[in-house]
Length: 291
Ligand code: UTP
Image (cartoon, rainbow, N blue to C red):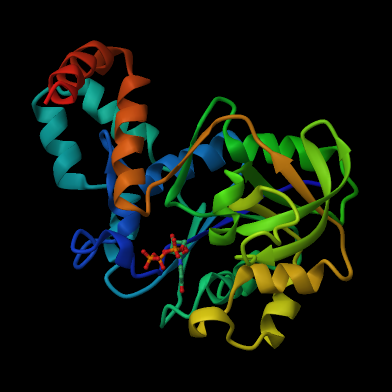
């Protein structure tokens, strides 16, 4: 199964990190020195993705600008001999023509956002990557999933899953676990936010998916679910009646950057992974921990 396209839903309101997201997209929040959206595009490029589809909305134009060339900046950096900075800008940019932008006119849920990409995806399997979730690992989470997909039947769907503490399963989408082969298992049922004590496992659905195009037919027919939104999990539950779903327990540390505490933790984790920042940050943190 060849996965060429990835969908990045970036049309949400980011209410959990207000007021940061009042005038700025959540996906442009910075971890160390790069916006979230750049991390996930880099992860997708590393995984071999060739086309990057952004589902945007109001106030999200700066995401499109981020991947554009800035002639004035390039010219100024060149005039000042700032070669390293010029290389960073050139490195971060996907090839011309490799990006598409479509619009979700109202934030009607993740499922609806994915459905908005249907014409650009066409009839082929594709990845969905949520930019507010980062996984710190090499190879990246999506590369691990694409590698797993290559070993499965070509009509398979895959979900990245992560173990959560048993007493917190009611806050997540949870997978039932069927036949297992190492870190990959057949999904035996999915349930969104199970009541306490009823979860089929502690494996939660995270923000990386590989889906078959038939998901669009299911999304098309879905009623608005929890919170008046069209949920991707509901569509996956529908598609699971006809196609196989596999869970992939990926390697790496996941960071939910859409919450304030998760965002701060991610900044520390990513900074500590940078040799040029690590020692200084460790000393600074010690100072604050003593307070
Ligand atoms: P989240 O639920 O984490 O994002 O969706 P949110 O709704 O923006 O955040 P909160 O809960 O209000 O703080 C995960 C991803 O899906 C996108 C978001 O932009 C985010 O990247 N999304 C969500 C959409 O594109 N459209 C939607 O209708 C909902």
